[in-house]
Image (cartoon, rainbow, N blue to C red; front, top):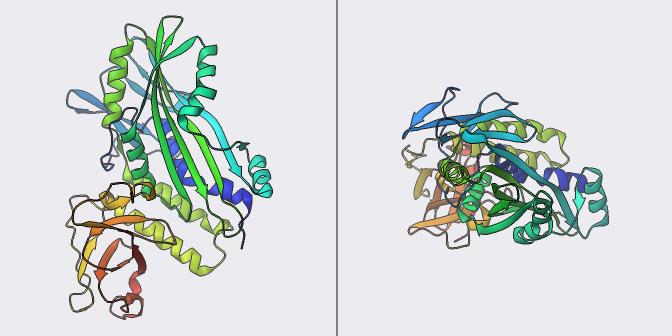
Length: 388
């Protein structure tokens, strides 16, 4: 059964777009420096002092709750909502703007391309972020009187984006990220720093070739030459320590959950039930404290359950990192083939089950099915495959 191309192009990039919304708001690291799991954010709107800096919260203008917070020196402030792309200001006239270079789509399916075009996508094959900078960004900057003086990859920004995406509904599509930092010199004596992120969503369809929805965006800091080094360092330091509010991410997932009935993706009640369990499971994990006890007693009287535990935010793994040297001693990665979600768990078992509350257990019995065990059958269990 073929989903509508417009659904593939628009809904298929939902995870990428939400991650991109964070980039536009300034919450994604602009240096190679943030790989830790997102930490909770206080609901208080007042600045909080930490390490001699001011912890500023960016308030989601639509939801009215903190989306993220970051530590800045005195004199910096967020603008929420942004004013004509201006999202952050600093001392000595420092300004930080949102960047967005458009949405693109590519597929060998003619119908899918036409549907994507009608929903606002430009048609273009995907390219590397470096190639995009050379072909699109640098010429635009040259028209403004800027020339590039340094460019470098931001691997920890990618790691942060992947960790963020792992906590969102993914379906059978796959998302990948690239991130670059570029410094510029202006003919008018100003300097600029651009954090650019490529978000690429590969949409696998039941019939026909896959489609690729991709976009480039980020942030741009502009300052006088004498103020630039300090402003850049403060900006990057804040990015290193940015904290995303898990309650905001939970609310976004709930928003997605409320809309699934209106989409054509869920042709069967079983498919819809699986997706609802997927979102419920991620929200339970996001809400769980990282310091909570990892063990969970499901039912000690069931001999087939060899090990049980609670999944936490730090256990989430993106598909892109599940096979790329991300292994940890004594840990395995398990995956749900229907939803795309992946988690690290303790190794030692061949079969795993995860319920809607983010509890999991391992077993060596391939015939044991908790969905038919009346003692725990009402907990929304789903089988997960052992990836490695």
